[in-house]
Amino acid sequence: MQIFVDMAKTLAVFCLLEQVILNLLPSGIYERYVKFYLGLLLLILLLQPVLQIFHLTGQLDSRVFTSAYEWEEQAEIWKTEWKLSEDWQER
Image (tube, rainbow, N blue to C red; front, side, top):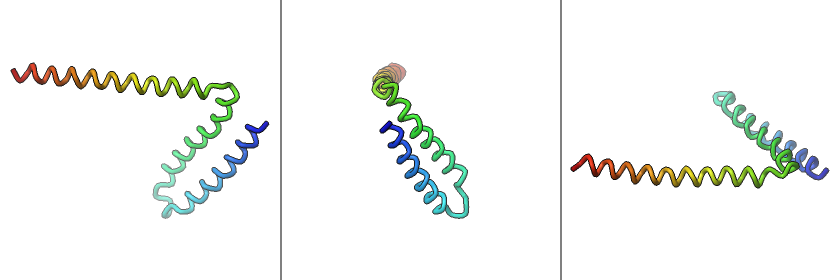
């Protein structure tokens, strides 16, 4: 039950901050883009309690950070291969 109370508080604060941000924009120039990103942020805020209920936050974090680490390793391999191919072509 506490999860839903926390979610309601978070949504209330989010709605207040959203209105402040939208009112500070100069004549709606970037309003469309700001609303898009605020909508994405709202989706993330709404998904947090669902992920907590099903205990998926730890699994999600480990998968995201693991794949990021794997991409970094692969990038280093590609850099090494690229340097070797450049050295080979110079000869």
